[in-house]
Image 1 (cartoon, rainbow, N blue to C red):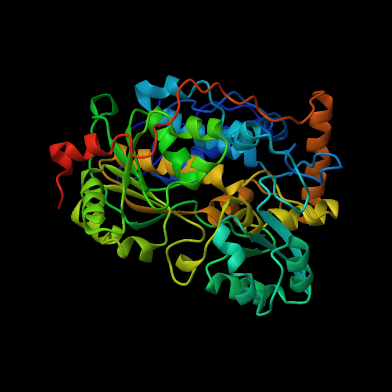
Image 2 (cartoon, helix red, strand yellow):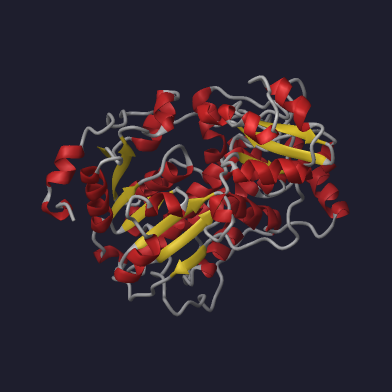
Length: 474
């Protein structure tokens, strides 16, 4: 049992019984997350104790790391256990809806998109194909050309004519410094990150920009919250999917001119993420569309967005001002690197954010190979952490503006129970590899869950949602 968040914080005086050693890491991580939110734990909330290496092998993380023609590579950080722990913490907060999470494992989320979409490991190319690790004159960068417009930026970025071809881009980048590639790319709004080490001190996984602490109603008496989800692709929609499991009503809001890009991908994964959400499509270039958007936001208990702050301000939405005016509002801001300047203007997706967090540098030192770790790993990790932050905010009666950065969430997970030095990390790798071998387990992708319902067509619920009195134009 987990008590509703106490605005004064504090942990229960007694700790739950845990499995010894590394098998307890998921539960330990769940506890650390809840503690950071000021939530008291009164009994065991951990998933079934599972060794981090086994969780990574079963959930798809290991099989998605390595060269296409080589063996799967185990990352000796408890990333899969962190995903399990974050989901366990959220399920504990869900109270009577806890059973809605019984068919889902946090570690499986790390391999879920690949399982749905038939993706596999490919060394220096991310499983999704849009992000490549490219050597520079003094290091390496992750370049993610996920959007069609990104290719058009290459001549300006490299300051030379270049064919729209990865080999041509790599040849030019090889003669440039890592710093220059990253700095100029970020100025142009490209998703580019340096291959750097995991930081010695992990950052917080969530930052409260404007935080309100209100007395929370008992979970059993809490009404169903309304979630207005302005995000797209993976992290934000996963967050709202998990909140839907916890009992929230979710309204997915998209632009008629630029709908969620995931709609053009494999349908099964999009349907799994978005089935059951009401779909509203608005012309955000028009005044009526912007007024309707502001009215929807005004009706929300929880807002999820993954835009740069200036983009929302151009639509007449100021998150900081809204949470100051409405203490009962929980606003979840998902970004690549946070809301502080200049990081607020830097673009990131899941694969390059994982490189920026240090995962590829760590694998280079362990294996001597240029590798991505998993498939867009920052997206599922951030999605489940964002859902926990959102639901905790709702439970306490309003969470304010809570900011999660893709890169920081991965850094936080990478720093959890991390060995103190390189020798200890190598020793852990050997120990974890032996653990998987003793279990006779071949790394694999999780079985994709059955999708019983299709997501709503774009804008299918626009008229019905906007016609309700709560959404009268403002």
